[in-house]
Length: 97
Image (cartoon, rainbow, N blue to C red; front, side, top):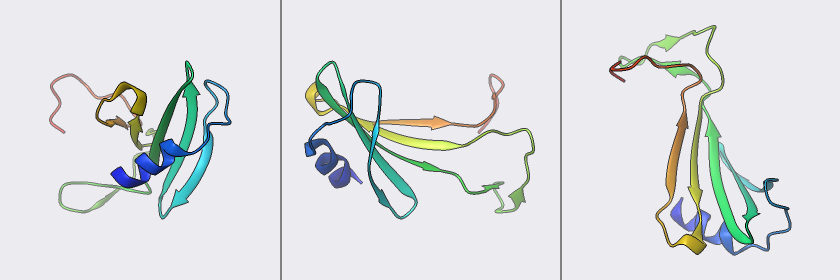
């Protein structure tokens, strides 16, 4: 994944700021890139297909929105990639996850 993000950031950035452009699809992941203040930003994301409990049983949660996992890289900042998670629902404080 780290190599894909690195290579993705080397691509020319044709998208305007704030408008991510799809760079590629790798199995269940999609990669995007855009420019932010003239600097390249790239990220890879995937969507959950199903939800399971700790014992592996499928859970049907009707009120849940989209569950996403995203890894973002800003090579011009020299920082490590950042992992973001969207749970698809609000989580109460002090709830074990």
